[in-house]
Length: 241
Image 1 (cartoon, one colour):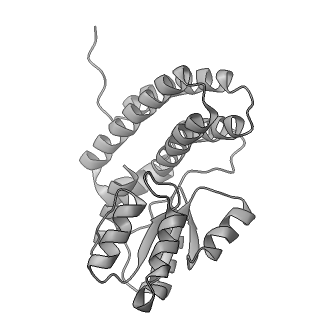
Image 2 (cartoon, one colour):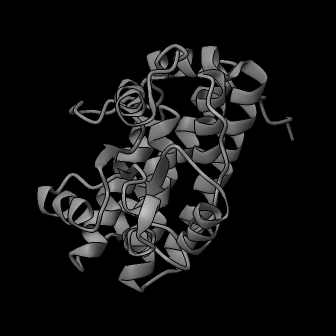
Image 3 (spheres, helix red, strand yellow):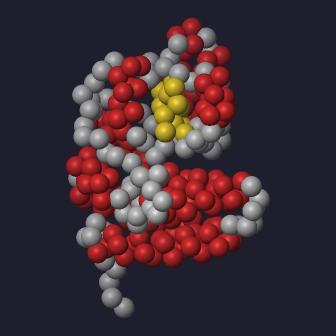
């Protein structure tokens, strides 16, 4: 879902876009054709974004100066510094801050016209709302109502799978990975409370603390979020019975 909304926004802004599903594939694509800029997610399967960036830089020549913009949900300064040290030219936040993305693309890939800002989750709120109406409205303008409804439904399905997986999972590293994915996706689509709870579970698991109560809170919040999206007619209501 993050890739899809990013693709819609970038293409509407006049960019040509190709996606890779992991760091190894990213290297192969970069070697296969010329790109103006690479958006490099830090956490990916097979090979992460830090390793992939180092490998691209090691190719030398034009690859040594190819703009690579990291995408990360990390807020720790030392982690961002390590990404820059690996060869990234800048680190952009996830969930995506659209004005920040357009500014970086203008700086590293030449100015292009951009669509309306799609907003992002309000991570500073003391009590995150179930659904960020401002972010939803901007996403609707960006993608259109049918596409937004489909992506919201898919995000809820991902969240359901995540809840079920977290309830069965005891390995902290796997919990951190699952919660991290949900945190970013929910945040991108303005599902603030889901994103905040996923962030909390990620932090608790990383610190080897009890995350069980937060998983139960996540499950209840998912139900409340689904009902709120149905009430707002953003997704179809489930059939009775």
